[in-house]
Image (tube, rainbow, N blue to C red):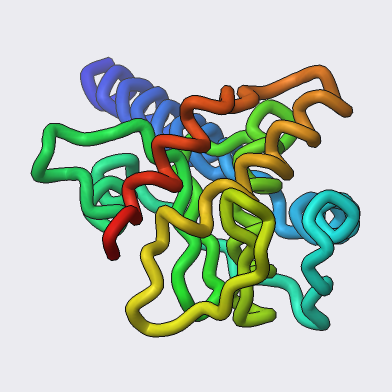
Length: 177
C-alpha cells in the first residue's frame, strides 16, 4: 500500500512538472507563428517609416525583464518599463512574457529598430534622415519607432500608443550628445 501511495505521489509530481513545462513552453509564440507575423509587420513599418525592408528576418530571442533592463541600462536606476531591446546586430530580445497577438505593438516598434540598424539610418524627431554611427544616441532613434507603433495601434485598435510628450522626451534626452 505504501509503495502504491509513493508511486501515485511521484506520478502526480511528475505530471505537475510536465504541465508546468508545457505551460512555460507555450508562453512563447511558436517560431512558425513569428515567421508569419513578422513580414506583414515589416511591410507596415516600410509604409509608416520609409525604411527599406531587410532581406533576412531578425533573430528573435527572449529574456527576463531584469535582463532587458540591464541591456537597456536602466536596472541600476530601479528599473524601467522596457519590454524589448534591439541590439545593433539586429537581434530582437523580447520579454519572456511576450505574447503574439497581445503585444504585437512591441514587436512592431522593435522591428523599426531592426530596420534602422539594417539600413544604417533613422529618421529623427523632425523626420530628417540621420546615419547611425558608433556614437549615435540611441534615444534619438526612438521617435521613428514610436511613430510607427502609434500608427499600428491606431490601425489595429489594440496596444499602447505613446503620446507626443513621450516621443519628445526621448528625442530631447540626446540633446547635446
